[in-house]
Image 1 (cartoon, rainbow, N blue to C red):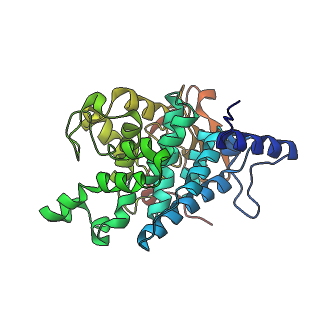
Image 2: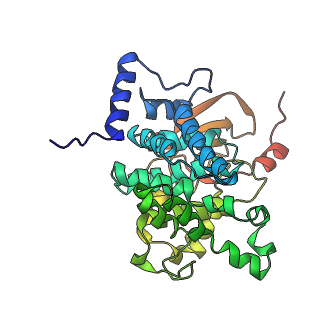
Length: 344
């Protein structure tokens, strides 16, 4: 009989053993998970360990490329398989959003992959498709390792025509690198090549339209675009800003598949995890979890009461349990520091 044992079976068995040993979802010596992410991850492997493995796998690929060596994609693929097999995309995404700094190529790529995984789970992707989607998020800009460093650092608006043309080849350069990781990466390479395509034909490098663009390419393309729109130096979520999401939803919605955009809003919402928000009673808190069934009624960690007094002990509430409360808008942390009561 043919043996169909896979890395997913191995990781599932590891998790079963971890549950039997009573693993609690906290990395030894690492930061404790916030309550909502701890509850989401249950008894499986901890978010810090899974994110660390993703980062190490991607860093190894980046290092090999920068040193002129052929990278080994197997450790990265195994790390992705473990993350997918954990079956907790919400907890992993929330941990990354709450604990990330937003700095560095690898950290942004890991967040992009986890946000894409969360959306893909909402789109009912199976484990195989979720793994390919997550690898697409991790590797979609890997071609930056082969382009001049000044192109990676400069904004497109500051580049001359020749440099902008080089930057537009990034999806193809990235796709070629991914292809060379092995035949099992072929679906990932195809999706990577499409991340900057748009359904209205305005994207590049091929100007594909509508169904010519794969769903994984469209999902990662949407997440990566919103991450790229984030203004540097802003507080709150280190990867996504409500203003960037509103810009896409109002002015650029024709660029992305309706099904993908809707699932983004259901899974990520207009106020992503780690966004500071004001409620209609003038209290201020931080979004710590969102819900597909009620994306505009997240779980909030209340930090300031309606009079502007900082709470000694933050209180966590789920807005779905408080029908009279709702989010009225985001709060700029810099503005908050200047208008709220000073810390003792």
